[in-house]
Length: 565
Image (tube, rainbow, N blue to C red; front, side, top):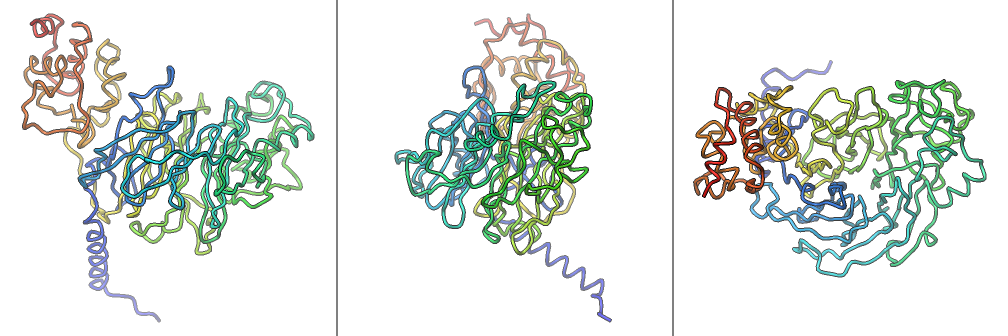
Protein backbone atom coordinates (compact mmCIF):
# COMPACT_ATOMS: atom_id res chain seq x y z
CA UNK A 1 0.00 0.00 0.00
CA UNK A 2 1.30 3.43 -0.93
CA UNK A 3 2.12 5.55 2.08
CA UNK A 4 0.25 8.84 2.21
CA UNK A 5 2.17 11.99 3.16
CA UNK A 6 1.72 13.22 6.69
CA UNK A 7 -0.28 16.34 7.56
CA UNK A 8 2.98 18.14 8.34
CA UNK A 9 4.42 17.20 4.96
CA UNK A 10 1.28 18.39 3.20
CA UNK A 11 1.44 21.67 5.08
CA UNK A 12 5.07 22.18 4.03
CA UNK A 13 4.29 21.34 0.41
CA UNK A 14 1.31 23.69 0.40
CA UNK A 15 3.41 26.47 1.88
CA UNK A 16 6.17 25.90 -0.67
CA UNK A 17 3.67 25.93 -3.54
CA UNK A 18 2.06 29.16 -2.33
CA UNK A 19 5.47 30.75 -1.73
CA UNK A 20 6.55 29.80 -5.25
CA UNK A 21 3.37 31.26 -6.74
CA UNK A 22 3.72 34.49 -4.78
CA UNK A 23 7.38 34.79 -5.78
CA UNK A 24 6.40 34.33 -9.43
CA UNK A 25 3.76 37.03 -8.99
CA UNK A 26 6.19 39.44 -7.35
CA UNK A 27 7.11 40.95 -10.71
CA UNK A 28 3.48 41.45 -11.71
CA UNK A 29 1.52 44.69 -11.22
CA UNK A 30 -0.78 45.14 -8.25
CA UNK A 31 -4.34 43.99 -8.96
CA UNK A 32 -7.37 46.18 -8.38
CA UNK A 33 -9.15 45.63 -5.05
CA UNK A 34 -12.31 44.52 -6.88
CA UNK A 35 -10.49 42.96 -9.87
CA UNK A 36 -11.97 45.61 -12.15
CA UNK A 37 -15.53 44.49 -11.28
CA UNK A 38 -15.24 40.93 -12.66
CA UNK A 39 -15.12 37.51 -11.00
CA UNK A 40 -12.24 35.06 -11.45
CA UNK A 41 -11.24 31.61 -10.14
CA UNK A 42 -9.30 31.43 -6.84
CA UNK A 43 -5.67 32.49 -7.21
CA UNK A 44 -6.41 34.84 -10.12
CA UNK A 45 -6.60 38.62 -9.90
CA UNK A 46 -7.18 41.41 -12.41
CA UNK A 47 -6.50 45.09 -12.98
CA UNK A 48 -7.91 47.56 -15.48
CA UNK A 49 -5.28 48.42 -18.10
CA UNK A 50 -7.33 50.98 -20.02
CA UNK A 51 -10.86 52.31 -19.86
CA UNK A 52 -13.39 54.27 -21.91
CA UNK A 53 -11.53 53.78 -25.17
CA UNK A 54 -14.70 53.83 -27.26
CA UNK A 55 -16.56 56.82 -25.89
CA UNK A 56 -14.91 59.64 -27.83
CA UNK A 57 -14.73 57.83 -31.18
CA UNK A 58 -17.79 57.75 -33.40
CA UNK A 59 -18.60 56.69 -36.94
CA UNK A 60 -21.75 58.52 -37.92
CA UNK A 61 -24.11 58.09 -34.98
CA UNK A 62 -22.38 54.95 -33.70
CA UNK A 63 -19.52 54.80 -31.19
CA UNK A 64 -16.41 52.86 -32.17
CA UNK A 65 -16.51 49.41 -30.58
CA UNK A 66 -13.42 47.61 -29.32
CA UNK A 67 -13.19 44.09 -30.74
CA UNK A 68 -9.99 42.03 -31.10
CA UNK A 69 -6.77 42.26 -29.05
CA UNK A 70 -3.13 41.43 -29.78
CA UNK A 71 0.01 41.75 -27.64
CA UNK A 72 3.43 42.60 -29.07
CA UNK A 73 6.59 40.72 -28.01
CA UNK A 74 7.52 43.67 -25.74
CA UNK A 75 4.10 43.73 -24.06
CA UNK A 76 2.56 46.64 -25.98
CA UNK A 77 -1.15 46.08 -26.46
CA UNK A 78 -3.14 46.61 -29.67
CA UNK A 79 -6.95 46.80 -29.79
CA UNK A 80 -8.94 46.71 -33.01
CA UNK A 81 -12.18 48.65 -33.37
CA UNK A 82 -15.26 47.42 -35.17
CA UNK A 83 -15.11 50.40 -37.53
CA UNK A 84 -11.40 50.03 -38.25
CA UNK A 85 -9.51 52.12 -35.70
CA UNK A 86 -6.52 50.53 -33.93
CA UNK A 87 -5.51 51.63 -30.44
CA UNK A 88 -1.86 51.13 -29.50
CA UNK A 89 -1.30 51.07 -25.72
CA UNK A 90 1.88 51.10 -23.67
CA UNK A 91 2.62 50.97 -19.95
CA UNK A 92 5.67 53.23 -19.56
CA UNK A 93 6.12 53.05 -15.78
CA UNK A 94 5.42 49.39 -15.02
CA UNK A 95 2.27 49.87 -12.95
CA UNK A 96 0.17 47.79 -15.35
CA UNK A 97 -1.84 50.76 -16.65
CA UNK A 98 -1.63 52.01 -20.23
CA UNK A 99 -0.43 55.61 -19.89
CA UNK A 100 0.55 56.09 -23.53
CA UNK A 101 -2.27 55.53 -26.03
CA UNK A 102 -2.05 56.21 -29.76
CA UNK A 103 -4.51 55.65 -32.60
CA UNK A 104 -3.99 54.59 -36.20
CA UNK A 105 -5.55 52.41 -38.89
CA UNK A 106 -7.37 52.68 -42.20
CA UNK A 107 -11.01 52.49 -41.16
CA UNK A 108 -13.51 50.42 -43.20
CA UNK A 109 -14.55 48.23 -40.32
CA UNK A 110 -12.83 45.16 -38.98
CA UNK A 111 -12.43 43.04 -35.92
CA UNK A 112 -9.24 40.98 -35.98
CA UNK A 113 -5.62 41.88 -35.16
CA UNK A 114 -2.59 39.66 -34.48
CA UNK A 115 1.19 39.41 -34.68
CA UNK A 116 2.86 36.89 -36.96
CA UNK A 117 6.42 36.47 -38.14
CA UNK A 118 7.48 40.06 -37.51
CA UNK A 119 4.31 41.69 -38.85
CA UNK A 120 1.21 43.23 -37.28
CA UNK A 121 -1.77 41.93 -39.28
CA UNK A 122 -5.32 43.24 -39.08
CA UNK A 123 -8.53 42.98 -41.06
CA UNK A 124 -11.26 45.24 -42.37
CA UNK A 125 -14.59 44.20 -43.85
CA UNK A 126 -12.96 43.59 -47.21
CA UNK A 127 -9.22 43.18 -46.72
CA UNK A 128 -6.29 41.82 -44.73
CA UNK A 129 -3.46 44.31 -44.08
CA UNK A 130 -0.10 44.24 -42.36
CA UNK A 131 2.52 46.59 -40.92
CA UNK A 132 6.15 45.68 -40.41
CA UNK A 133 6.78 45.39 -36.68
CA UNK A 134 9.88 47.26 -35.56
CA UNK A 135 10.77 46.56 -31.89
CA UNK A 136 10.34 49.68 -29.80
CA UNK A 137 7.83 51.37 -32.08
CA UNK A 138 4.33 51.80 -30.71
CA UNK A 139 2.69 53.02 -33.91
CA UNK A 140 4.23 51.38 -37.00
CA UNK A 141 6.24 53.83 -39.07
CA UNK A 142 6.27 51.70 -42.21
CA UNK A 143 3.71 51.73 -44.97
CA UNK A 144 0.64 49.53 -44.54
CA UNK A 145 0.67 46.65 -47.03
CA UNK A 146 -2.40 45.09 -48.63
CA UNK A 147 -2.23 41.28 -48.35
CA UNK A 148 -5.76 40.45 -49.57
CA UNK A 149 -8.25 42.90 -51.06
CA UNK A 150 -11.80 43.07 -52.41
CA UNK A 151 -13.19 40.33 -50.19
CA UNK A 152 -17.00 40.00 -50.25
CA UNK A 153 -18.79 42.05 -47.61
CA UNK A 154 -22.51 42.58 -47.28
CA UNK A 155 -24.73 43.91 -44.52
CA UNK A 156 -24.31 41.15 -41.94
CA UNK A 157 -21.45 38.88 -40.86
CA UNK A 158 -18.89 40.88 -42.80
CA UNK A 159 -16.00 40.95 -40.26
CA UNK A 160 -12.99 38.91 -41.36
CA UNK A 161 -11.29 36.55 -38.88
CA UNK A 162 -7.92 35.07 -39.83
CA UNK A 163 -5.06 32.95 -38.47
CA UNK A 164 -1.82 31.30 -39.61
CA UNK A 165 -0.76 27.65 -39.62
CA UNK A 166 2.73 26.27 -38.88
CA UNK A 167 3.75 26.84 -42.50
CA UNK A 168 2.71 30.47 -42.38
CA UNK A 169 -0.33 29.95 -44.60
CA UNK A 170 -3.19 32.36 -43.96
CA UNK A 171 -6.75 31.16 -43.28
CA UNK A 172 -9.52 33.77 -43.70
CA UNK A 173 -13.23 33.44 -42.93
CA UNK A 174 -15.87 34.82 -45.29
CA UNK A 175 -19.16 34.57 -43.44
CA UNK A 176 -22.64 34.21 -44.82
CA UNK A 177 -24.60 37.49 -44.93
CA UNK A 178 -27.74 35.51 -44.04
CA UNK A 179 -29.12 33.83 -40.96
CA UNK A 180 -30.11 30.92 -43.20
CA UNK A 181 -29.81 31.02 -47.00
CA UNK A 182 -33.52 31.18 -47.77
CA UNK A 183 -36.35 33.11 -49.35
CA UNK A 184 -37.72 35.37 -46.62
CA UNK A 185 -34.65 35.07 -44.37
CA UNK A 186 -35.57 35.38 -40.66
CA UNK A 187 -39.27 35.64 -41.52
CA UNK A 188 -42.21 33.37 -40.84
CA UNK A 189 -42.44 30.62 -43.42
CA UNK A 190 -38.95 31.18 -44.87
CA UNK A 191 -38.01 28.48 -47.39
CA UNK A 192 -34.45 27.29 -48.02
CA UNK A 193 -32.79 27.78 -51.38
CA UNK A 194 -32.23 24.85 -53.72
CA UNK A 195 -29.15 22.64 -53.54
CA UNK A 196 -27.82 24.19 -56.73
CA UNK A 197 -28.27 27.69 -55.34
CA UNK A 198 -26.54 26.72 -52.07
CA UNK A 199 -23.61 25.19 -53.95
CA UNK A 200 -23.20 28.34 -56.05
CA UNK A 201 -23.51 30.57 -53.00
CA UNK A 202 -20.88 28.63 -51.04
CA UNK A 203 -18.32 29.21 -53.76
CA UNK A 204 -18.13 32.75 -52.35
CA UNK A 205 -19.59 32.73 -48.83
CA UNK A 206 -19.94 30.61 -45.73
CA UNK A 207 -16.46 29.14 -45.34
CA UNK A 208 -12.73 29.57 -44.85
CA UNK A 209 -10.25 30.30 -47.64
CA UNK A 210 -6.50 29.66 -47.46
CA UNK A 211 -3.96 32.11 -48.89
CA UNK A 212 -0.20 32.50 -49.28
CA UNK A 213 0.68 35.11 -46.65
CA UNK A 214 3.88 36.10 -48.46
CA UNK A 215 2.05 37.51 -51.48
CA UNK A 216 0.46 40.97 -51.64
CA UNK A 217 -2.69 42.25 -53.36
CA UNK A 218 -4.38 38.88 -53.56
CA UNK A 219 -8.12 38.51 -54.12
CA UNK A 220 -10.50 35.73 -53.15
CA UNK A 221 -9.75 34.04 -56.48
CA UNK A 222 -6.14 33.55 -55.35
CA UNK A 223 -7.25 31.56 -52.31
CA UNK A 224 -8.35 27.96 -51.94
CA UNK A 225 -11.68 27.16 -50.30
CA UNK A 226 -10.50 25.28 -47.22
CA UNK A 227 -13.85 24.41 -45.61
CA UNK A 228 -17.53 25.17 -46.06
CA UNK A 229 -20.94 24.91 -44.39
CA UNK A 230 -20.26 27.80 -42.00
CA UNK A 231 -22.62 30.56 -40.95
CA UNK A 232 -20.16 32.97 -39.34
CA UNK A 233 -17.14 32.66 -37.07
CA UNK A 234 -14.86 35.27 -35.55
CA UNK A 235 -13.08 33.00 -33.06
CA UNK A 236 -10.30 31.22 -34.97
CA UNK A 237 -7.02 29.84 -33.65
CA UNK A 238 -4.28 27.42 -34.72
CA UNK A 239 -2.97 24.87 -32.21
CA UNK A 240 0.78 24.21 -32.58
CA UNK A 241 0.70 20.69 -31.09
CA UNK A 242 -2.11 19.08 -33.11
CA UNK A 243 -1.37 21.47 -35.99
CA UNK A 244 -5.06 22.01 -36.58
CA UNK A 245 -7.22 25.13 -36.81
CA UNK A 246 -10.07 25.42 -34.35
CA UNK A 247 -13.01 27.79 -34.70
CA UNK A 248 -16.04 28.68 -32.59
CA UNK A 249 -19.10 29.44 -34.71
CA UNK A 250 -22.11 31.61 -34.00
CA UNK A 251 -25.29 29.54 -34.33
CA UNK A 252 -28.43 30.52 -36.18
CA UNK A 253 -31.30 32.65 -34.84
CA UNK A 254 -35.11 32.93 -35.06
CA UNK A 255 -36.29 29.31 -34.93
CA UNK A 256 -39.64 30.34 -33.47
CA UNK A 257 -40.03 33.28 -35.85
CA UNK A 258 -39.54 31.12 -38.95
CA UNK A 259 -41.72 28.26 -37.68
CA UNK A 260 -43.87 29.18 -34.65
CA UNK A 261 -45.85 25.95 -34.98
CA UNK A 262 -42.92 23.64 -34.16
CA UNK A 263 -40.62 25.97 -32.17
CA UNK A 264 -41.32 28.26 -29.24
CA UNK A 265 -39.22 30.96 -27.55
CA UNK A 266 -37.54 28.40 -25.30
CA UNK A 267 -36.44 26.38 -28.33
CA UNK A 268 -34.95 29.51 -29.87
CA UNK A 269 -33.22 30.43 -26.61
CA UNK A 270 -31.70 27.03 -25.83
CA UNK A 271 -31.73 24.65 -28.81
CA UNK A 272 -29.06 26.13 -31.12
CA UNK A 273 -25.54 25.62 -29.82
CA UNK A 274 -22.50 27.78 -30.40
CA UNK A 275 -20.01 25.13 -31.48
CA UNK A 276 -16.24 24.64 -31.61
CA UNK A 277 -15.02 22.68 -34.60
CA UNK A 278 -11.70 21.22 -35.59
CA UNK A 279 -11.27 22.46 -39.15
CA UNK A 280 -9.89 20.06 -41.69
CA UNK A 281 -9.38 20.75 -45.37
CA UNK A 282 -12.69 19.87 -47.02
CA UNK A 283 -14.75 20.10 -43.80
CA UNK A 284 -18.49 20.74 -44.19
CA UNK A 285 -20.22 21.92 -41.01
CA UNK A 286 -23.78 21.60 -42.31
CA UNK A 287 -25.03 25.19 -42.70
CA UNK A 288 -27.59 26.17 -44.01
CA UNK A 289 -29.30 22.77 -43.92
CA UNK A 290 -28.83 22.05 -40.21
CA UNK A 291 -27.96 23.31 -36.75
CA UNK A 292 -26.49 21.58 -33.69
CA UNK A 293 -28.90 20.93 -30.82
CA UNK A 294 -26.84 20.82 -27.57
CA UNK A 295 -29.58 18.95 -25.75
CA UNK A 296 -30.19 16.24 -28.34
CA UNK A 297 -26.48 16.31 -29.31
CA UNK A 298 -27.33 16.01 -32.97
CA UNK A 299 -27.48 17.94 -36.23
CA UNK A 300 -31.13 18.88 -36.64
CA UNK A 301 -32.82 19.79 -39.92
CA UNK A 302 -33.36 23.55 -40.16
CA UNK A 303 -37.02 24.60 -40.36
CA UNK A 304 -36.28 26.28 -43.69
CA UNK A 305 -35.37 22.80 -44.97
CA UNK A 306 -38.26 20.81 -43.50
CA UNK A 307 -37.16 20.65 -39.87
CA UNK A 308 -39.88 20.23 -37.23
CA UNK A 309 -37.85 20.14 -33.97
CA UNK A 310 -37.65 16.32 -34.23
CA UNK A 311 -36.12 15.62 -37.64
CA UNK A 312 -32.41 14.82 -37.41
CA UNK A 313 -29.89 14.74 -40.24
CA UNK A 314 -29.59 10.98 -40.80
CA UNK A 315 -27.20 9.73 -41.93
CA UNK A 316 -25.16 12.74 -40.81
CA UNK A 317 -22.44 13.70 -43.33
CA UNK A 318 -21.35 16.85 -41.49
CA UNK A 319 -18.40 17.39 -39.15
CA UNK A 320 -19.51 17.17 -35.54
CA UNK A 321 -18.41 19.79 -33.01
CA UNK A 322 -15.62 19.06 -30.55
CA UNK A 323 -17.21 21.32 -27.90
CA UNK A 324 -20.80 22.55 -27.70
CA UNK A 325 -21.56 25.80 -25.85
CA UNK A 326 -24.99 27.18 -24.90
CA UNK A 327 -27.04 29.01 -27.51
CA UNK A 328 -26.45 32.59 -28.59
CA UNK A 329 -23.37 33.31 -26.46
CA UNK A 330 -21.63 34.90 -29.49
CA UNK A 331 -17.93 33.91 -29.47
CA UNK A 332 -15.77 36.81 -30.70
CA UNK A 333 -12.08 35.95 -30.17
CA UNK A 334 -10.15 32.86 -29.11
CA UNK A 335 -6.61 32.75 -27.71
CA UNK A 336 -4.26 29.79 -27.30
CA UNK A 337 -2.59 29.80 -23.88
CA UNK A 338 1.11 29.21 -24.53
CA UNK A 339 2.28 30.93 -21.34
CA UNK A 340 3.55 29.48 -18.08
CA UNK A 341 2.27 32.04 -15.56
CA UNK A 342 -1.07 30.23 -15.11
CA UNK A 343 -1.27 26.78 -13.46
CA UNK A 344 -0.54 23.66 -15.49
CA UNK A 345 -4.19 22.88 -16.31
CA UNK A 346 -4.46 26.02 -18.45
CA UNK A 347 -1.36 25.46 -20.56
CA UNK A 348 -2.10 24.56 -24.15
CA UNK A 349 -5.83 25.28 -23.79
CA UNK A 350 -7.98 27.98 -25.37
CA UNK A 351 -9.70 31.02 -23.89
CA UNK A 352 -12.82 32.30 -25.69
CA UNK A 353 -14.48 35.71 -25.16
CA UNK A 354 -18.27 35.48 -25.46
CA UNK A 355 -19.94 38.78 -26.30
CA UNK A 356 -23.32 37.60 -25.02
CA UNK A 357 -26.72 37.08 -26.58
CA UNK A 358 -29.15 39.65 -27.92
CA UNK A 359 -31.97 37.43 -29.18
CA UNK A 360 -33.20 35.32 -26.27
CA UNK A 361 -35.88 37.81 -25.20
CA UNK A 362 -38.38 37.67 -23.61
CA UNK A 363 -36.14 35.25 -21.71
CA UNK A 364 -33.06 36.56 -19.97
CA UNK A 365 -29.94 37.11 -22.10
CA UNK A 366 -26.93 34.85 -21.52
CA UNK A 367 -23.21 34.54 -22.15
CA UNK A 368 -21.19 37.68 -21.28
CA UNK A 369 -18.18 35.71 -20.03
CA UNK A 370 -14.78 34.30 -20.90
CA UNK A 371 -14.55 30.52 -20.99
CA UNK A 372 -11.60 28.15 -20.90
CA UNK A 373 -11.45 25.01 -23.06
CA UNK A 374 -8.87 22.43 -21.84
CA UNK A 375 -6.79 20.60 -24.46
CA UNK A 376 -4.93 17.32 -24.01
CA UNK A 377 -1.25 16.54 -24.63
CA UNK A 378 -1.99 15.87 -28.32
CA UNK A 379 -3.39 19.37 -28.76
CA UNK A 380 -7.03 18.28 -28.98
CA UNK A 381 -10.00 19.55 -26.94
CA UNK A 382 -11.13 17.41 -24.04
CA UNK A 383 -14.75 18.14 -24.98
CA UNK A 384 -15.51 20.31 -21.96
CA UNK A 385 -15.34 23.96 -20.98
CA UNK A 386 -15.47 26.04 -17.82
CA UNK A 387 -16.43 29.62 -17.16
CA UNK A 388 -13.25 31.46 -16.31
CA UNK A 389 -14.17 35.16 -16.03
CA UNK A 390 -17.70 36.30 -15.21
CA UNK A 391 -19.63 39.25 -13.82
CA UNK A 392 -19.20 41.42 -16.90
CA UNK A 393 -22.90 42.13 -17.33
CA UNK A 394 -23.18 43.45 -13.76
CA UNK A 395 -26.72 42.08 -13.42
CA UNK A 396 -28.03 38.55 -13.11
CA UNK A 397 -31.26 38.79 -15.11
CA UNK A 398 -31.87 41.14 -18.04
CA UNK A 399 -33.56 40.99 -21.43
CA UNK A 400 -32.11 44.09 -23.12
CA UNK A 401 -28.41 44.13 -24.03
CA UNK A 402 -28.26 47.84 -23.09
CA UNK A 403 -28.60 46.73 -19.48
CA UNK A 404 -25.26 44.89 -19.58
CA UNK A 405 -22.40 46.87 -18.05
CA UNK A 406 -19.67 45.17 -20.12
CA UNK A 407 -19.68 42.77 -23.09
CA UNK A 408 -16.45 40.77 -23.58
CA UNK A 409 -15.03 40.63 -27.10
CA UNK A 410 -11.23 40.48 -27.26
CA UNK A 411 -8.88 38.04 -25.55
CA UNK A 412 -5.11 37.72 -25.97
CA UNK A 413 -2.11 36.30 -24.10
CA UNK A 414 0.86 38.50 -23.21
CA UNK A 415 4.53 37.47 -23.35
CA UNK A 416 4.60 37.04 -19.55
CA UNK A 417 1.54 34.75 -19.63
CA UNK A 418 -1.00 37.38 -18.51
CA UNK A 419 -4.43 37.16 -20.12
CA UNK A 420 -5.90 40.36 -21.57
CA UNK A 421 -9.66 40.78 -21.96
CA UNK A 422 -11.37 43.64 -23.79
CA UNK A 423 -15.02 44.63 -23.97
CA UNK A 424 -17.15 46.66 -26.37
CA UNK A 425 -19.50 48.91 -24.42
CA UNK A 426 -17.10 51.19 -22.52
CA UNK A 427 -13.83 50.11 -24.07
CA UNK A 428 -12.34 48.60 -20.93
CA UNK A 429 -9.35 46.23 -21.02
CA UNK A 430 -8.39 43.97 -18.13
CA UNK A 431 -5.15 42.15 -17.43
CA UNK A 432 -5.68 38.86 -15.60
CA UNK A 433 -2.71 37.59 -13.58
CA UNK A 434 -2.12 34.56 -11.41
CA UNK A 435 -0.91 35.39 -7.91
CA UNK A 436 -1.74 32.12 -6.15
CA UNK A 437 -3.30 34.13 -3.32
CA UNK A 438 -6.44 32.28 -2.24
CA UNK A 439 -7.55 34.79 0.42
CA UNK A 440 -10.95 36.44 -0.06
CA UNK A 441 -11.02 39.67 -2.05
CA UNK A 442 -10.57 42.79 0.05
CA UNK A 443 -12.91 45.44 -1.31
CA UNK A 444 -13.05 49.03 -0.17
CA UNK A 445 -15.82 50.12 2.18
CA UNK A 446 -17.01 52.59 -0.45
CA UNK A 447 -17.46 49.86 -3.02
CA UNK A 448 -19.11 47.50 -0.55
CA UNK A 449 -21.48 50.22 0.57
CA UNK A 450 -22.82 50.69 -2.94
CA UNK A 451 -22.12 47.37 -4.63
CA UNK A 452 -25.80 46.49 -4.92
CA UNK A 453 -27.56 49.71 -5.84
CA UNK A 454 -30.55 48.02 -7.45
CA UNK A 455 -32.72 51.14 -7.47
CA UNK A 456 -30.69 54.38 -7.26
CA UNK A 457 -32.40 57.29 -5.57
CA UNK A 458 -33.61 59.76 -8.17
CA UNK A 459 -32.74 57.61 -11.19
CA UNK A 460 -35.63 59.14 -13.16
CA UNK A 461 -34.64 62.74 -12.44
CA UNK A 462 -32.74 64.78 -15.04
CA UNK A 463 -29.61 64.39 -12.90
CA UNK A 464 -30.07 60.64 -12.58
CA UNK A 465 -30.40 60.26 -16.33
CA UNK A 466 -27.35 62.46 -16.98
CA UNK A 467 -25.35 60.40 -14.49
CA UNK A 468 -26.22 57.13 -16.21
CA UNK A 469 -25.60 58.53 -19.70
CA UNK A 470 -22.43 60.53 -19.02
CA UNK A 471 -20.88 59.92 -15.62
CA UNK A 472 -21.42 56.19 -15.05
CA UNK A 473 -19.09 55.24 -17.90
CA UNK A 474 -16.14 56.48 -15.81
CA UNK A 475 -17.33 56.39 -12.21
CA UNK A 476 -19.43 53.22 -12.63
CA UNK A 477 -23.19 52.98 -11.96
CA UNK A 478 -22.50 52.21 -8.28
CA UNK A 479 -19.95 55.02 -7.87
CA UNK A 480 -17.02 52.65 -7.33
CA UNK A 481 -14.76 54.28 -9.94
CA UNK A 482 -11.71 52.46 -11.32
CA UNK A 483 -8.49 52.35 -9.27
CA UNK A 484 -5.84 54.57 -10.81
CA UNK A 485 -8.16 55.79 -13.56
CA UNK A 486 -11.33 57.36 -12.17
CA UNK A 487 -11.98 58.18 -8.50
CA UNK A 488 -14.73 56.51 -6.51
CA UNK A 489 -17.68 58.78 -5.73
CA UNK A 490 -19.01 56.48 -3.01
CA UNK A 491 -17.39 57.61 0.22
CA UNK A 492 -15.74 60.60 -1.48
CA UNK A 493 -14.97 63.55 0.80
CA UNK A 494 -15.59 65.89 -2.12
CA UNK A 495 -19.09 64.52 -2.72
CA UNK A 496 -19.93 64.49 0.99
CA UNK A 497 -18.29 67.83 1.84
CA UNK A 498 -18.93 71.49 1.09
CA UNK A 499 -21.46 71.64 -1.77
CA UNK A 500 -19.80 74.84 -3.05
CA UNK A 501 -16.57 72.94 -3.74
CA UNK A 502 -18.43 70.12 -5.49
CA UNK A 503 -20.27 72.69 -7.63
CA UNK A 504 -16.94 74.28 -8.59
CA UNK A 505 -15.51 70.86 -9.52
CA UNK A 506 -18.31 70.31 -12.02
CA UNK A 507 -18.25 73.87 -13.33
CA UNK A 508 -14.48 74.21 -13.70
CA UNK A 509 -13.07 70.68 -13.60
CA UNK A 510 -11.20 69.05 -10.68
CA UNK A 511 -7.76 70.20 -11.87
CA UNK A 512 -8.78 73.84 -11.41
CA UNK A 513 -10.39 73.39 -8.00
CA UNK A 514 -8.84 70.57 -5.97
CA UNK A 515 -5.38 70.74 -4.28
CA UNK A 516 -2.35 70.06 -6.47
CA UNK A 517 -1.15 67.31 -4.09
CA UNK A 518 -4.41 65.35 -4.29
CA UNK A 519 -4.46 61.75 -5.55
CA UNK A 520 -4.14 61.79 -9.34
CA UNK A 521 -6.03 59.64 -11.85
CA UNK A 522 -5.11 58.89 -15.45
CA UNK A 523 -8.49 60.00 -16.86
CA UNK A 524 -9.07 63.71 -16.25
CA UNK A 525 -12.66 64.91 -15.91
CA UNK A 526 -13.51 67.95 -18.05
CA UNK A 527 -15.68 70.84 -16.78
CA UNK A 528 -19.43 70.56 -17.30
CA UNK A 529 -20.31 74.25 -17.31
CA UNK A 530 -22.28 73.65 -20.52
CA UNK A 531 -25.04 72.04 -18.43
CA UNK A 532 -27.84 74.29 -17.21
CA UNK A 533 -28.10 75.35 -13.58
CA UNK A 534 -31.10 73.06 -13.13
CA UNK A 535 -29.32 70.03 -14.66
CA UNK A 536 -26.15 70.57 -12.64
CA UNK A 537 -28.15 70.92 -9.46
CA UNK A 538 -30.01 67.72 -10.26
CA UNK A 539 -26.78 65.80 -10.99
CA UNK A 540 -25.10 66.95 -7.78
CA UNK A 541 -28.21 66.14 -5.76
CA UNK A 542 -28.21 62.66 -7.32
CA UNK A 543 -24.55 62.18 -6.35
CA UNK A 544 -25.11 63.23 -2.77
CA UNK A 545 -28.28 61.22 -2.24
CA UNK A 546 -26.71 58.01 -3.56
CA UNK A 547 -23.06 58.28 -2.54
CA UNK A 548 -23.12 60.56 0.51
CA UNK A 549 -26.34 59.84 2.41
CA UNK A 550 -27.80 62.41 4.78
CA UNK A 551 -26.29 65.33 2.87
CA UNK A 552 -28.39 68.23 1.64
CA UNK A 553 -29.79 68.76 -1.85
CA UNK A 554 -28.32 71.42 -4.13
CA UNK A 555 -30.53 74.04 -5.81
CA UNK A 556 -30.22 75.80 -9.19
CA UNK A 557 -29.77 79.07 -7.27
CA UNK A 558 -26.62 77.68 -5.63
CA UNK A 559 -25.25 76.76 -9.07
CA UNK A 560 -26.05 80.22 -10.44
CA UNK A 561 -24.29 81.87 -7.51
CA UNK A 562 -21.10 79.84 -8.07
CA UNK A 563 -21.27 80.34 -11.83
CA UNK A 564 -21.48 84.13 -11.56
CA UNK A 565 -18.15 85.93 -12.23
